[in-house]
Image 1 (tube, helix red, strand yellow):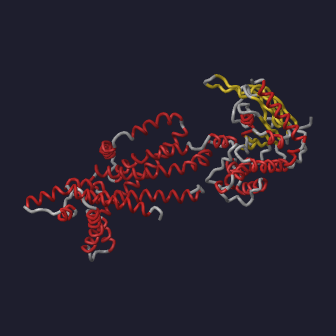
Image 2 (cartoon, chains in turn green, brown):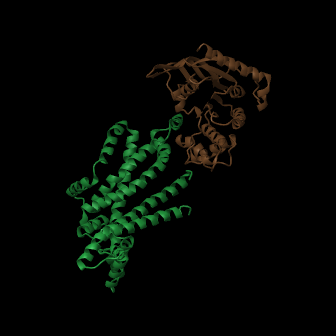
Image 3 (spheres, each protein chain N blue to C red):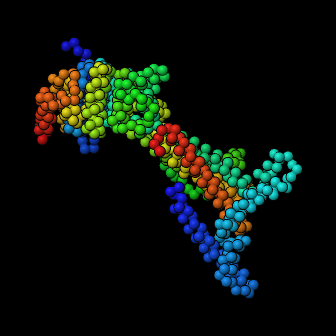
Length: 306
Length: 261
């Protein structure tokens, strides 16, 4: 609650700036129309025009909100009404399968994100375990891990898709692979740090008990790495979402938020782009806070101080 | 003598090779520790007192001489879990309760659940921490954490207890209290204890034998047998006998420093 007013203030400032920029960016079109129509624009008319254009350069928050509602709620209700008389399950699948419905696109993106996140996290943890336990792997794999992240994913994504298609993988998996490509990195880095976090004394202690490498791993290294893992997962899940969207820009025929953004781009409909962007951002917020919630619960159950 | 020899070092040396040349952490250390003795190692930093304890625990490998622990090599002794080791920091796992921490070595050693429970109860009683088994480390004071770590070292019933400045990070009052409890515990369990310390009063108060060491090269300069009775209330530290012993330790430390300069 203490944070409420600062957050509210910042939000209001952002919205104010947003509306102000909408005027600045959209005014040329308004003036053009006025010149062609041969009339003068007063300031209030100008503002009213810039905030309500059909294809604005920068749509206002309320226009974006309207577009989101139109492409989720309204679209669903229309579909629902149109399938009157069909069996219930059929009606639900019709609503969810509606190509114009953003919920469907968000769902597609979410599934690629989650699958990629699971792949990436698993790969990241495995690599970290190998790096921590094997000197050769530490020296040989880590540079590749870092190099992998210096290549722009936009350039790599089409190649990943082509290669995976050639081996018969299409649909969700290629997108998830791109998503995993982005999300495994923070997990490797965080897990390596976490697995190495036990100090010399704790390792000596294990030695005095004649503990095996496996026991040191399960009883000391792994639990000690949990706080590090969660920090990485928060970054990883957001990276997964970016990866899924990049994948959808390439395989746009399957839909998804990335495909919607691309469509908006083709038709010059900034509203669609912005609506998809905002939904993607909201999705990211939900994902990151879910990881945060899982972190709090896990740490509390494990007894770490909060 | 009919005493059982628990630890015997002969001509024990350990040299670390560093970039600045060899460092003689231990040189020609001869020492015998008998069963049930409380031996303190005292000396300035760099005198090898901690290194000696770590050699006994097989955490360092000597480069010369021989050492036996319970008649075995240190490695064999470690494998047989012949000793418990208490470090300067309690090093409790924050994700385990007090009981969970004490159980840790027992789990590693593959002791049955039922027996674990019983052993944990026993050592908790010994360090006066009964009732705290379900607390997490952060809920305990520094002194209580160190007691829990002693309990953990005792849990698997090794008859040697090696302690490396276990109370070094605690304040004077807590330290006095823990010293008293440690003596009580020693009397009850009849363990052989090796205890590294910086503090002369602590060494004199606790020990039956005080090993004075000096640095560069790390060596034993004097071994002082304590004349104090086994029963030691805290105020024994004001007795002439105690002060005399402390004086001898101080002299021994000074002598070690003089031939260094």
